[in-house]
Image (cartoon, rainbow, N blue to C red; front, side):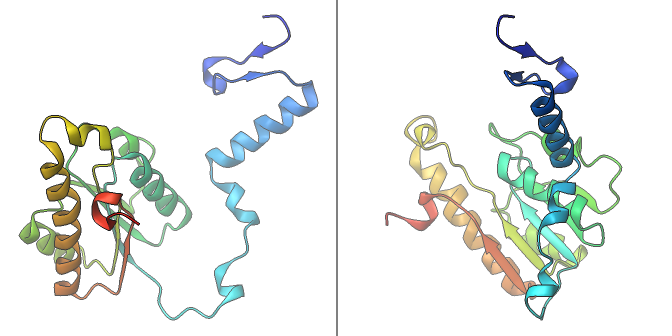
Length: 190
């Protein structure tokens, strides 16, 4: 290949047009990012502010989607003392392997296939797992699909009702911290 080098499939499949020193530096950075040691350089929160709350059992919704899987992987690997319970309904935009493969062998992670719109199931799960923190990331976000099969009504049901269900279930069981990250179907126009 003229002017560049393609690395093998086991080496990220990237094209580098750099000298040997730069390629070595990039390879080391990729390795640090893969095992999350890159975060060792970040300041530790206890050094910055006094903590008044430390989670122990975190429920992550939408865990088989792009954002939810990355959040759960980072939490499970960086904080092995936290128990991470991942919930996903497994629809067109999620895949259980996104999160379960990277976390195979991590005793602090469990995957549960469930719909966040099911209030009774969410309350039961939160009580069984003694959830104290919820990171609600489940949502349909492919806006173009809201104009097709199922239409915007299904997006409203999944996103708005799902969020309302999670809020009410969290209140019911006494969750201490609730983080919501969603789409414009929940927040509305700005």
